[in-house]
Image 1 (tube, helix red, strand yellow):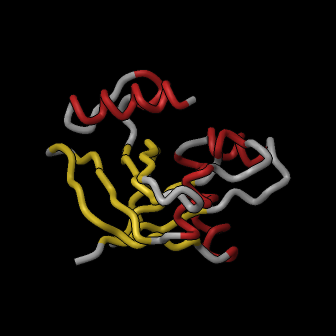
Image 2 (cartoon, rainbow, N blue to C red):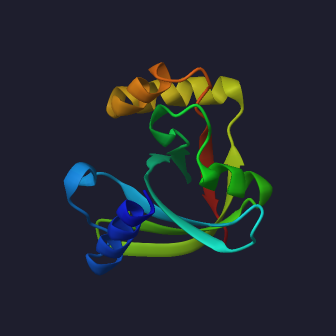
Image 3 (cartoon, rainbow, N blue to C red):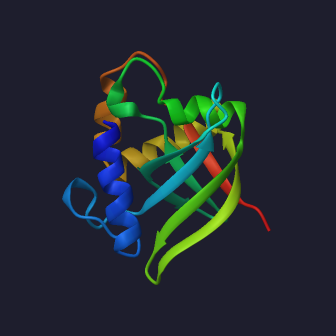
Amino acid sequence: MAAWNDNIIAEFRQNDGRVGGPFEGAHLLLLTTLGAKSGKQRVSPMMYFPDGHRLIVVASKGGAPENPAWYHNLVANPEVHVEQSTESGIVAYDATASVLPRDERDVLFARIAARAPGFGTYQGKTDRIIPLVALTRKN
């Protein structure tokens, strides 16, 4: 998985936030977190969904029984760095991550799964409730 992510990260940065393959045409971002145990910077590519002044990301891990490492990292250290793909290229900024409460998560997850059905499939593969995380840009 690390090599696959590394290839997406490199393609994203070399092509102004655009990548091919399964993410072609999707809203993508690179999320840099600090390792919860190591304290080292970790970069993870993922889809995002605009929601007003914030971006929503899905901690799906493909429907695995556990949350992705980046989720554990941002719970421990919610100050993150975002490289967001936009129509005009990559916009980079610092943000604060917050896990959405269950009621808000359920409403937004239904909307996200309607737009990107794979996330609904992932939820069906696991007993855990897949978390949603809001990324709010710092000024």
